[in-house]
Length: 248
Image: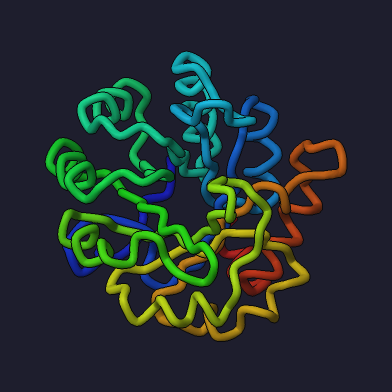
């Protein structure tokens, strides 16, 4: 059966484990992707729906198929990655597909989180915070997002031309560390993550709120396909080898 997240967060909602670090790999589009990621050491798989023009956008029928495939692995938690902002639409989608993790990847306001929390009390709600030019775009709203019921934040880049999601642009550790005192929820780190730049984030990894990383490009080969060696290298670099073995 799919692994249940561990202890509860301050708001009382189920989310990622308090101590275990996870590797989330984004952009699966086929059952073969799911098989590769599960075997190579990923913990969560991002499946896209409601991401206009996204390279991994899925119609609902295919989304449902991949969610079921992820659950069938016994280790992968499927995570909806979406720009959608209608909580009724999102709640209905979650119920129909069996999704429990929802990642709001655009600029959905705190009331959307609150409505989703009311509609899906057992869901894991992930809100992306975008850093651009060293500053967090949503900084004034962080407290409101937390009060609305956010379980996890995901810290990612927004480019100067406004692109968000799977940009491959790295976050500065200095900028991330400057933001962390504002958070009372745990967080995942995204943005150009690779096995080689793990030492550049020692301070972030040591933070008690750090729960793992979210990767897309760094999990792929030169042809853009998911690569088992690349995923395993990410898992080993960002978690200890012991924790990787224990997660199997």
